[in-house]
Length: 144
Picture 1 (cartoon, rainbow, N blue to C red):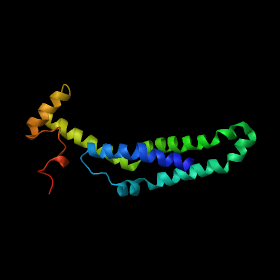
Picture 2 (picture 1 turned 90 degrees about the horizontal axis):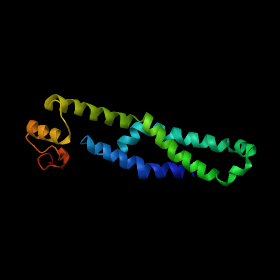
Picture 3 (picture 1 turned 120 degrees about the horizontal axis):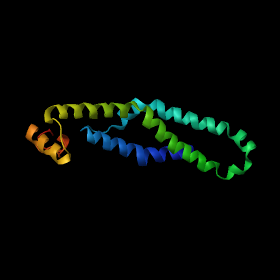
Picture 4 (picture 1 turned 135 degrees about the vertical axis):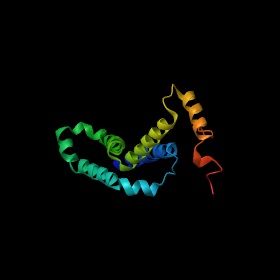
């Protein structure tokens, strides 16, 4: 159940979120790159799950009635533990955040202060001479 919760979180929440974040910084998502950066966190979470499993007998001796819900506890720990650890310690997400911050700083330098989204779009279009609402990876001029 722990592994199931972890896999469910990765497939339904984490990977789609990372794909979205990479699109925001005009990069392509690579599962290999992500695993290269954060493999240690996923293994550490499985060690944590194993520790819970090994210590389960002590918890059941203390309160035997929870044996009816302990499987779902493991699923929750797998999913939420995955969420918390990967959110806080992910090198891959930290790198994406840094790219986003730097690109934002560059944009601010060229456009100056903006009053809102529409103002930002207008100043961006003027500064670049292109429609800034279309990511560069989707334009024909940037594709070989």
